[in-house]
Length: 301
Figure 1 (tube, helix red, strand yellow):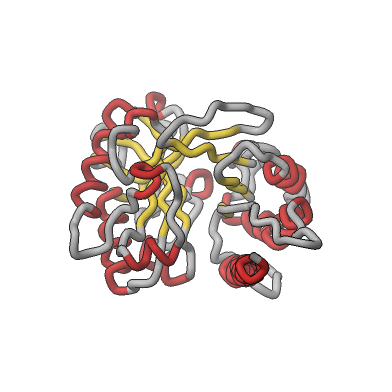
Figure 2: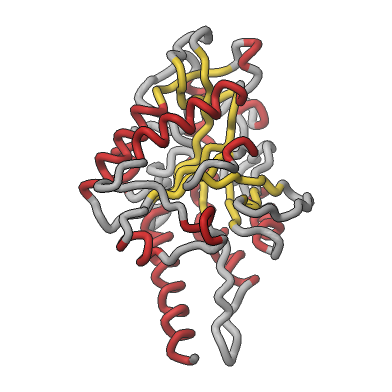
């Protein structure tokens, strides 16, 4: 989840990041899962905002900063780092009738320029995902998913269809099926319940992408603050990747090019706990492993 600079009224309950967009990019994060809302009446909200919570009609929602500020920071950083690619996933939407059109307009205003980094439109135009190399060469290095059907007509904005545990959905042109392992549950002593969800999510073969969420909701885990719970759950990144790798081992003759997970979500990803490597270092190692397998597959053809 992405939140901006605002500290908020109840950070223990609702704030799940302490780095702004630029700081997360510098840390090495490249996938951003954004909850957002359009409101000028909720306390602390001033239009299209990142946020966290539920039931805003009852005031149970906290805004943390303008979406436009977040995207402008991302654009400035991407224009300076011309070989980097980011994925923006706008999933938790409140007041969608007003919120989604406002988001689409901001995205177009910021990423529609020809001379600077812009949205990747290949999937909406051809039905196929580009290679990362092609995205860099074309400077179309921003991939956007929005969990709302109204974005279908817009080039460069892919509708996300969320696949919950045990749920089956039909593929639709121009949309992506994204499996989520999220479950709000008490983390106990070590947050290990998420590993069973990891196994179930990575076992699926009907999703375009697999998204693993190594966190829970505040009210499901007693009185621990979200940043305290993160210290338990963030230890499970490497275990989660290894579970998924065991489900897709390379064949003895050819390389199985099906990889999962595609995205890992953590609260406070910069909270390394007592592990030897942080999430960015672990993911870099896994990406290198996958690249080596792909190169080996190409040689064998």
